[in-house]
Image (cartoon, rainbow, N blue to C red; front, side):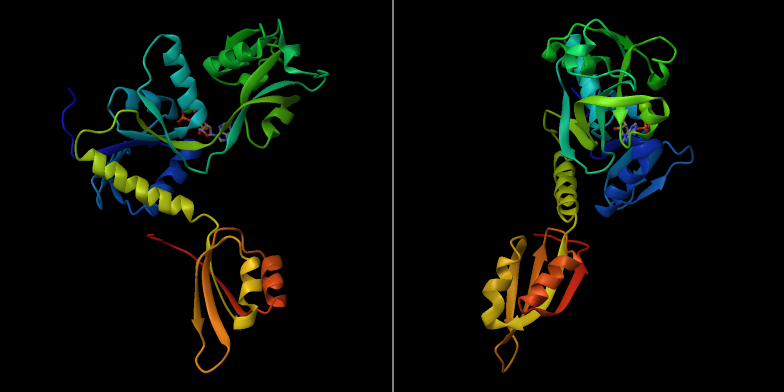
Length: 299
Ligand code: ATP
Ligand code: MG
């Protein structure tokens, strides 16, 4: 029986691509920390929520063994390790709680430039180098393709040139690394981004409330993406036409301007507020248009 704990511990990447954005996201949820001298631990000062700074590969395991309660890690790492555990018959203990909107990339098959790629079936009988053997094996099985999976821990993109493989299965974002290695991406196995991972079973102590509080704030922060407060004035007669141009406006407030047929209108808009949209509103009778950033919202 795990000991009752009164603080929540979140594992995040110590450095690398996800470390900084993960801390920034948690900070925007109102968390602040005092960092230990060895830079391995951040002690929560505003809330009893601490951070453990680790290699990203260790994060799923730390959640599985209860060392950490939650983690921020790439979906690719989370699913690869879940796939690995499933293969050995271990029960799943963690899952994705939220997609976090940064660290976007995809896990893809890439082949040498000169390969005249036709379809996934072209991989039959070939050797494919990857650091994601579980995800690749699952995908090959689902496609009904019999190919050899060559597991490498790094530098997968040079495997074809070294003669170790015919193709690779690796993470791609811009494609620049592939191009530099004379490879081209073909099939996508997985769309990935940073996710908040947590246990499948609910917490049985005060951590349940802490996790719920964190999720509420996280959802508010994530939900505000691209949101703007739009304000303008118009003749009341134009309001219906203007609202037609604002299908994404939430809870619009209309105030009558004293002693006239004019109104002042304000609304939270989720879609991007481009110049084009403002000009369309202006043509439909809006004026004194103002677009303001939204820092926080508690619905
Ligand atoms: P660590 O030292 O923590 O083990 P790492 O080198 O394994 O770090 P990073 O290169 O920092 O890991 O990548 C972390 C995550 O960033 C990846 O698992 C993936 O989810 C995401 N990511 C986004 N774009 C890319 C990309 N172009 N290449 C690799 N990972 C990417
Ligand atoms: Mg790693």
